[in-house]
Length: 143
Image (tube, rainbow, N blue to C red; front, side, top):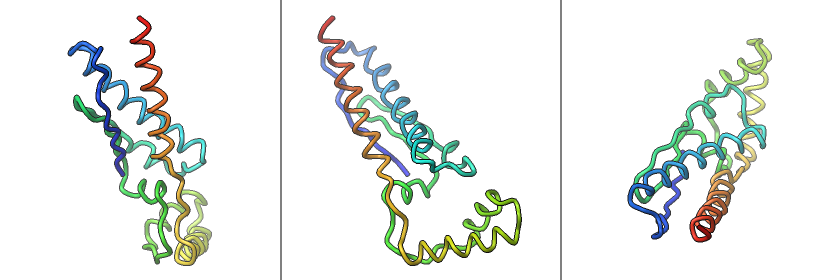
């Protein structure tokens, strides 16, 4: 999973301020991703949550995380997912191997029939970052 927020730093920023500006945007985008995972209750083992990190250049703010974050974000068409990762999640959730087996089979079957519903986290994060950028630019203009 990667969310790339490409922005141009406002021209009114000094060169030294650009790095701090982009660092702030990247950090806030990662925080928004984490926050959104809690809001939509997409936290189980915490693996995706703890995998989220950010970095930036002078032109881009980037948020990355575990590979399956993209499936939560954009959803999927129906497919037959691998059993083992689902069983491991189900075992973490139930703490009972037999219950985990039944739950994993049910989840696997549901994904095979319906796919994964998209949660549109990246769209939400980009919208929030656009609002944030607008506020930052407005504050700079009012100085």
